[in-house]
Image 1 (cartoon, helix red, strand yellow):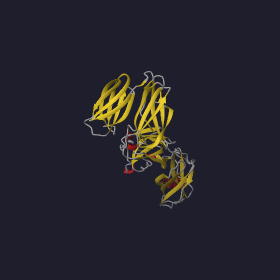
Image 2 (spheres, rainbow, N blue to C red):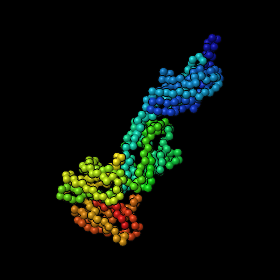
Image 3 (cartoon, rainbow, N blue to C red):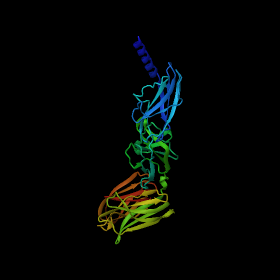
Image 4 (cartoon, helix red, strand yellow):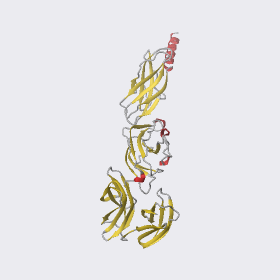
Length: 429
């Protein structure tokens, strides 16, 4: 009879502990080192719950895992209470598992095992940051964003026309639409378009396409930890910068060329206007990829008249030297020009547009090449749409006439390419 009674008591005690229930458990106000834990816990009708505890760990917790008392500390039999606690001294960018468990009047805890009531990631301890945003005057619908990664799993970049975009929402993953503005997810249906999702790739730059050159865009970057339904964005210090109007770039560069000189390679360029232009860096490369600065030329600051610049490279590389300009604003932002090639063995720039002019919708271009070369002449409108493309052969100084009678008066982009040599110039029809 005693054995039967003991068995009955044990069964009743076990049932008492198992009959509590936990619902709506959540982790909120998550930072790199802290979180607020909260949930609803119901005491069974057999007796009061005299205490509640939150258990948490980087693996599913056990009874020996770190824990903290919840508040309020009791639940009357048959009732449900909202329990909360603040946990500190957590590790940044880390996956945590949590339980909420009650204590009956006999100081018996329910078992802390099985499937956790809640999982979450703490935020990264270092946020990503935008270093610069570079627009190419030849590609007015594109913007390259250079950034430094934080310590999380990746970054999300969001853009919006005209105002600050919404920030990403925790527990939500996004599609970036292959880095085309307007093609990715819209956060909050507010025209806040996701344009890049890092997914742990740790890239340091991305080029966004599909932009409107007449608009100003605001760009934000957020670091995140975790993935899927546990993803957690660090948005408390999200960085937001705005672009300049792409149709009004800091410097309107209208030509850049390399010409022959008995002293070396003479680099020449002109600007139609300048806004906040501090200086130019003339850069040189032996492979067209890795460049070093060989000269610095002061800019005009602000100007709306045609200005000519030049720099002499008295020691061009043996064979082909590649050159580009880095135009730097007073605020440190910069723009890169196209790349030019100069062949020291030929003693002349591989390609040079000596002149261009129009008359009755006929566009005449005067080209100079060191030897006979076969190439391509292309004409684009300011949106980058190809209008004409012609194969040409050029030897020395020659004229080439293009029929522009089917096009309205205005500014067009002329590109002349011989092999790897490319020169781009704005022309007026």
